[in-house]
Length: 248
Image 1 (cartoon, rainbow, N blue to C red):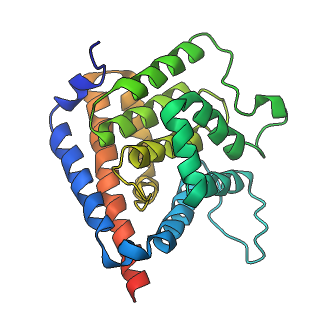
Image 2: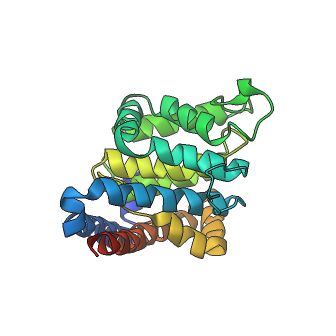
């Protein structure tokens, strides 16, 4: 069976950008703070990622001193962040590797718990024609592709942003799914990178690039993949700053 992502690797600049992202994340895993103290740095990365992801969807970034988060988008992002950290992450990765759609449903349940009125909508894709079919194709692609992880992560991210499969919290789910690809593939095994900060700082470029992916053109898809590879590389620099601070 032909790998549907294979043509993307041959688009201008994609292979080199994927290699740079991989090398940057490998380097941050070798940082002295991450050799033994990675649990602490990964936890900080998780919080930064959650706050940035929430802000991308119009949520707050403020963490109240009493821990009572009232903003529903931020609350959902933090719940997702907890599922992408520590033992919970290992459990979710296990589900992702066996049944990606089940993992997506779990992410939506966490992300949208305070955003929907009907609990029956949590974890359930929209009934619109074509949504289930495209999700099935995405899941099969994930289970069979041999494309570099940065490329696969970009495609999963872009496809979920475009499809909006749940109709709520789709951005949070898309970015979390991208992170699951990087962890499960070994690209960012300890979930240290924080590409979400890059995307937030360039929010309009992020939205424009996502729209380009949604257009389906080679230029649009290639541009999105390059943008996401750049975010992973920059996210490694953010991770380095966290590790540097931990090292004192």
